[in-house]
Length: 411
Image (tube, rainbow, N blue to C red; front, top):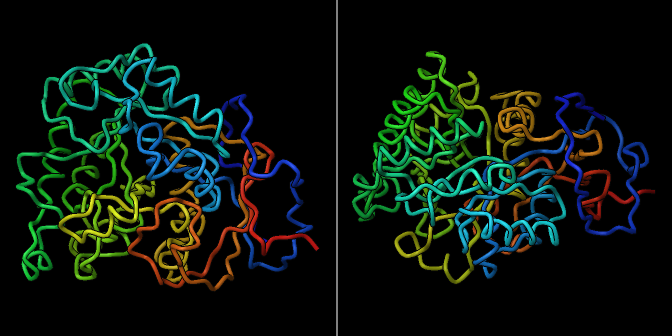
C-alpha cells in the first residue's frame, strides 16, 4: 500500500462531520481486503470550486447529495460557490446556507461569500460582516465588468486578509457564443466564445492586483494566453494563483459532440490550449485542479450545445480520470497529482488538514464511467463511457466514514 502523509498542519476546525452511516466503524487500512502496491492511502482531497446549488436550486443538487458525491470522489473538503438564491452577500443570506451545511453535509463544506450584492457586479457585498464565515470572495458564474467595482472589492478583501477568486470573462467579447470560437464551431454553425474574453479579463485583473496588492486566484483557466499571463505575474512576484479542471486537460474542441454534456463555461478550447494547460500543470504555473462541479437537471441538459445551460459534474470522476490519463502515461507523477488536488488548495486557501481525514484509492481498478451510478443528482459529463484505472473505496472525514464502497468491506 502506498501511504502519503504529512502534507501540512493547519489549525483544525471544531464542527464534526456528519457521516453517511454512524454504525460503521472506521476500518484500519490493514484490515481491508486489499494487498500490495495497488492501493494508495491519501490525505483527503480538496476542491475549492464546486456548485452545490442549495439554497435556491435544490432540483439540481443539494448539500447532501453534492457532499456525498464529493466523498465518493475522495474529497473531504469542498468550497461552495455563491451563485445561489439567496446569494450569500450578507450575514442573513449566508446563514441560510450555513444552516443547510450544518444539517446535511457529510464532509467539510466551506462557503464562498459574494464579491458584489446579488452577484450583479454593481455594489460591493457586505464583505466585512461575513468574512469570518467564508473561505474567500467570488462572483463565480459572472465576471465583474466594472474596473472601479473590482478595485474596491480587491481593496476590501486585502484588508480582510481574504482572497479574491475571479470568474474572468469580458462580456463585451462574448457575442452570444456558447462553445469555443474554433474549428468545431465554424464547421457546425455554432456561435463561438473567443479566448480573448477570458485572458483580457485576467489581464485587467492583474493590473488591479498590482495596484491593490490583494491575494488573487483565477478560476477555471482554459486558454493558453491566460497561462502565460499568470506565469509572468508569478515571475513578477504578484500574489497570484490559478486552477484548471480535468475537462480542459483531457479534452479539446475536436472532441465536441452535439450534446449538452460538452457545454461548460469557459468552453473546451483548442488542442494548443490543452497543451499549454498541461505544460502549466507540469511547471507549476497552474496551482491546482478543481472540478467546477456544476449539476443541472437532465431536462435542462437535454437541449444540445445551443440550448443547454453551461456546466457539467465532476466530483466523482476527477481523481480517477487524472490518475488514468495524466499519471499512468507519465505526464505527471502521483505525488504531483496529490499536490494539485490536496496540498496546494489547502495551502493557498488555509484549509485545515487533519490526520483523521483520508481516502483510500484502488489504483488497480478497471471501471467504466457510468453517470447512472453517480451519487450526484447531476449526470451530465463528457466522460461518460471512459475507462478509468482508479476508484475510491473509502473516504473518512474527521474520523467518520463519509463513503465506503461495497468492494471495500472487511474480511
